[in-house]
Amino acid sequence: MSQTAFHPPLRTLMGPGPSDVPSRILEALSRPTIGHLDPAFVELMDEIKALLQYAFQTESQLTMPISAPGSAGMEACFVNLVEPGDKVIVCQNGVFGGRMKENVERCGGEAVMVMDDWGKPVDPQKVEDALKAHPDAKILAFVHAETSTGALSDAKTLAELARRHDCLTIVDAVTSLGGCELRVDDWGIDAVYSGTQKCLSCVPGISPVSFSERAQHVIANRTHKVQSWFLDMNLIMAYWGGSAKRAYHHTAPVNAMYALHEALLMLKEEGLENAWARHRENHHILRTGLEAMGLEFIVPEDARLPQLNAVSIPAGADDAAVRSRLLADHHLEIGAGLGDLAGKVWRIGLMGYASRIENITLCLGALDAVLSDMGAAINSGAALPAAEKLLAHHEA
Ligand SMILES: *Cc1c(COP(=O)(O)O)cnc(C)c1O
Image (cartoon, rainbow, N blue to C red; front, side, top):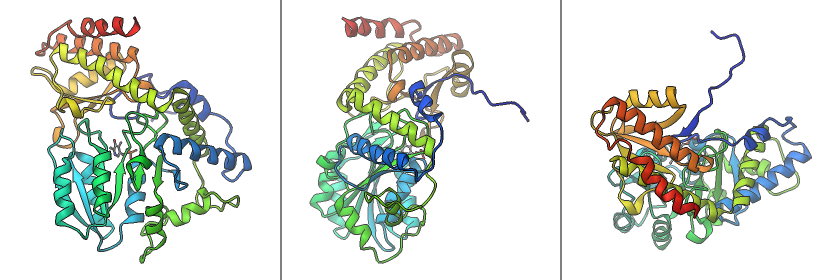
């Protein structure tokens, strides 16, 4: 066992999260800890809420960070809105939709599954059929950006369908927030959760959530107590709510909140739409290089996430060996396949601060070197020139 201080190796994080955290955020994290009810901290909480409203594009007052990772935000949405016996239509096109089903069932609800192939977006036609077949459904739940496959679903259309059929919506925006268009109020989303370590490029461990007025009404009028004490929004509101008098609920991770505040400031400074455009442009450059190398995307072009690029592993490449050489020789982390796609794909993230030109050229160069050396079936030497052609254009 090591008896000395831990100094992590320096990595470039281009997996499915966490993504590269800029030094400006790490520096915020290291500022002195103050009390979680200190008036200065209460002011910071109000600022974080306002910045989150901007990031989610919502005016909802019930918008705040849960003091736990994205999975807790997911659970917060389900335990507050689902009561025993409730019917929930759950769309699954990857790993995270499966977790939604688990959540519904653990709340005593009934999950009606709408299944799509891994790598495909959620099919609105199937969702409409399910809504018609189950007029008693209370909620429609789906993943906006499926990080396990790199597929983007049409959240606007899906939320509209739900509203037309008098259903609430629960949307997983863990990977979409800050990385691609998301408009919670305009699209009429009722409950949404995200994470700090993907396109916000903050440290892991916090989950921003937001609930619409309709959702708040449902939560306030439940017949059963929320099964989770920690995630009961009725109680959390006493701490994070708008009133001047804040009551102790739990000790907020004070320093992590400094970091989140800094990350949200950076997003605001860049501008939400500029951040979405940057993710799109960098995806285009990376994709051009990967395709020149001969790697194939598993998601159809019109449904690809700019922030998560899933490509098939080429013949002659040993999945684990490639990833460990990227890490050892190039200090570069890319993601392995998850669930059904384990061993079949790599997931290359361009999330938040990691969505930069330097990272793209590092990744293309390193992948080319390792795969060529291994004798994998790729077009050696083709990736960087193809990407650089776009860069010259980009800078002109
Ligand atoms: C990462 C992720 C989660 C889980 O977030 P954690 O912070 O790991 O708990 C949930 N949904 C999606 C789509 C994700 O990408």
